[in-house]
Image 1 (tube, rainbow, N blue to C red):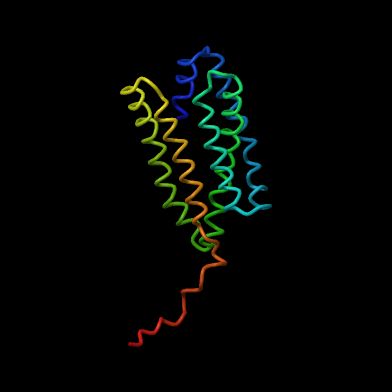
Image 2: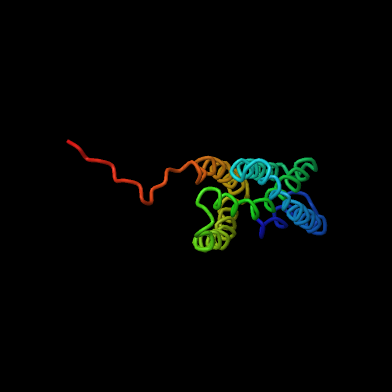
Length: 175
């Protein structure tokens, strides 16, 4: 939604200057969201990331009502904090769930999909707007995707809870 943020805000009620200011405030909150790292240290990466994805969903949902100042403020605060926190928390979830040994390879693989999504999403969002004349369906889809992400993170088990598979005896196949 980021490339469409100013267009969305100017399309609903705000001036271009105000919309640009809202982007600046969102990015300031993104920087403050780096505090998501200490949150993950205190409560665990998975728990903190689930909360962050729910916060992302709340921020995106608030964007649907952004013509009201309270909803826009909620989007800026919740969405901005969450965007910054995810950049810190996702590697921590990977380490907690898969270990540190192959972190570089795993981040490289997941990074490809992140870049593909970041490249395709604005185009699809724009197409949805072109077809429907509204960003509502795209924003609602983002809300749903963030909630699905929170459920997916809940499905990630810590490596410490995984049984050791290397060197473990093969299950017997007695008949």
